[in-house]
Length: 496
Image (cartoon, rainbow, N blue to C red):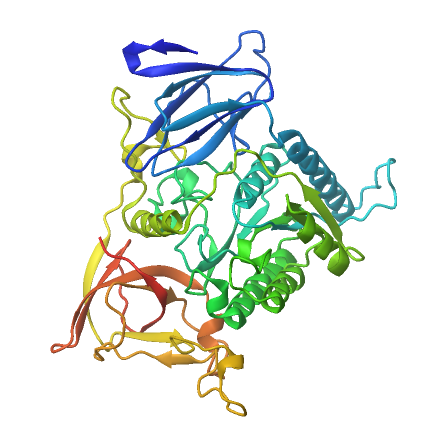
């Protein structure tokens, strides 16, 4: 390692199969430029971040307390502005992850062969022809999302035109949209990493749609809370809705189905100890995923007890595989996660902007030049009657065990309750609203809980309430009429 004072950068030389790990403090950013050894002019993929290749000679920007690692299979040189914490590790789980990818790749190839009526390969003529449908489970701070990104990026890079479906059922992270949501999107180009605000890359709903890399159009359902214990019955329902929608997509796109799907899950699916989630609830939600997405592989990231538990429950009918946790995984506290959620909502409205470090002219964020990622959200004044707003279940739902003996709930966990914006206790000021798609016009019969089954087309923030004049001001990333629309409020708030 030696200094390069001209650009205020340092040079790090990475040996083959090592990785450079970094963590950023609040308010700092980082620029990284990779160059590859002349002795390997024909080898590509010499530097990658969670499975996505870095292009040689381009400065990549990272910001907002990003914590990531750049791995090299063949060795490379990195030119790096100062990071808050940085080191090189020779112990990584990447070989194990690559082996899992190869196994999934074989499943995809077999599924494609079966679809086209090609004979099975000679090595295992009796092998199942199902593509990989993978549920990734692991405790808090185990690196589940990183594993999902690596496996998805490797599939995209395999050169077989795969577009695996990446699914996030972790409402605290929100996937491509806003925290409180669960979502899925087919991925056909590598998922970049720049900040924890866009853990799975940018979507067309929250970035300029003129950019080619933002063609992701996720399918989104709204749960509305960070914790699964707030309303596990509702989360079960929206998971099943998402699975049903994906099932219809696969039915209509048999070629796309062969790419398979990979599902990222909340840590509370894996442990009852620190999350306050009952064992019954988490088993019910894991089963909801297994059923809804027709899972055939469960990956357990570094947790022996969970592996034994899943082997006992599911080992007889699907593959349960334990994989190592990376030593580079950082312990994230509650306040960090809350800051990320606020930043994610800011990014949804304003786009992802990372200021380059001193001495670095400009760079790439999420594969695009930084200037292209700025949004101008629209502020609109509406009448209280223009938008119908619901809240699902009581705001503070006591567990059934806490009710008096023989007492029944007056409001079920699944019941949509109309919210009156003119009520001083509406809780709508600074609230995040999920704007729902209109009901299907083909279905003549309406039903009480219909809004639970409608997907989300965007998110709004109520920035002010004028109760005497029955007006509210709404912030939205794009302009458009909201009259006659339906929205659902959860427990998330955001203000600038």
